[in-house]
Length: 375
Image (cartoon, rainbow, N blue to C red; front, side, top):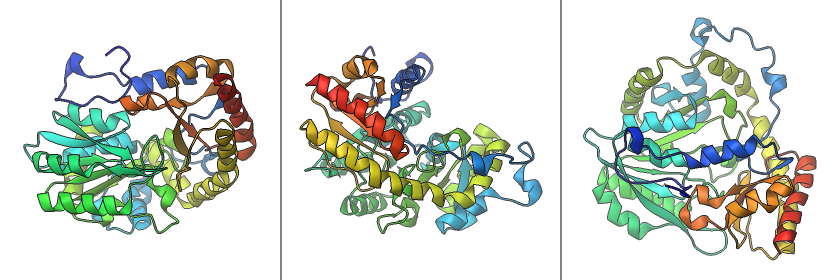
């Protein structure tokens, strides 16, 4: 496993077979270095202190006040409360949705690459074999599903798990690929599950099509973590059919017992103000993306900004890990190497524009210096 940073797919694992979460191990140690110019954050950087300071009864269950967090999720997503399962973040939602949605006797799950590690490792820890399919570059910006590979896999697996807004590139699955995948899994009679933690960046556009709205076999997983900049709350959910949600509640109670009350209380306080985050993303895209584009153009790096979200990725033409721990460290810059998501992205880096413009302006100057030294 030495030098293997990307998610690992294969048979079920237990004990010493559990593969390392190399991305997180690497990333936490780099965050502890406190580099001055941090462009690594994949979630919005937003100060919520005004809305959350002074929240009362952090250890008193919201049920005591007649509040069911499922209802606020259901109202925002336009579904019945019976379809909602609150979770402790999206990663927890992945575990629970897999347990709830896959049919009895399931053995294999098709997972998308590039991927965030829990998309692959969670299923293996639950006794499933994971087999991968890819989203591949198809012209500037666009990343397409490998339909040929999926057509071979779908009849042989018990479910499919993918991430509509791809990490690390920031590009959404194309409409025709999404329609094809929904229909292919429906015809085969298997569940289709989506990690939609980034999808709310499209909420104000006609591109917002949560998977749970596209079929009874579809399951959406999301949270307040990324688009709303509230990762510390560990507050998420998944939405499926009523049958899957019943299974999900049983799985949640088995793994977690009850929702963390402070998380629920803080999420309730933030909920009426979520549009603040979408406003902030629009502002930061408007000011920050042109700055990044100008730097990349200056250094001859071809790139197209994804139409939504707070991060993107591009090829710098050299070993990204060496760059980040070498020249970038000397300049106080932190970005994320593409190899944390796929073995073929070793020369890619992910850069976020999730900060306030005045801060981003200084950070992107550090990126400029690093690329200039790279030559």
